[in-house]
Image 1: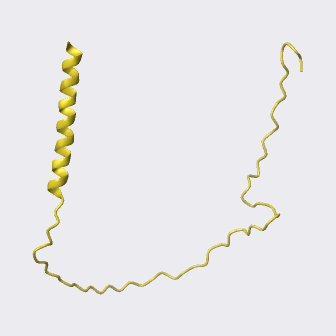
Image 2: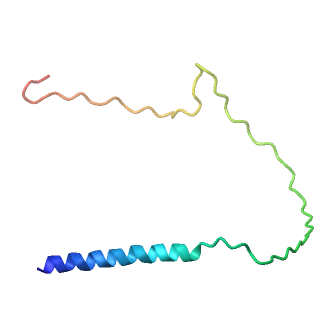
Image 3: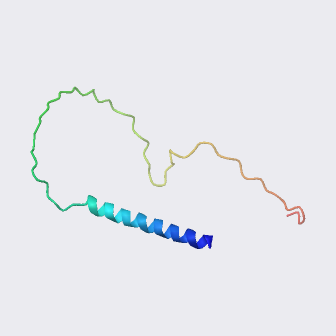
Length: 89
């Protein structure tokens, strides 16, 4: 009997939540055009002096078939070979 009452309360609460979302969505949307807008234009003039541009170092070129300058220089040791304790291979 308790689970039936709980289900009914949950269903009513869920329905009320969905109804509230629909009502809020409908009330916030409007197709009315704004009554009157005034447009103001402001002009501002700012003067900035740019810092001198310095050349940057060139990135290494990637050529097809050539070495990859972005590859790591450290090479990991090969994985150890393990033998199975029963078969020995």
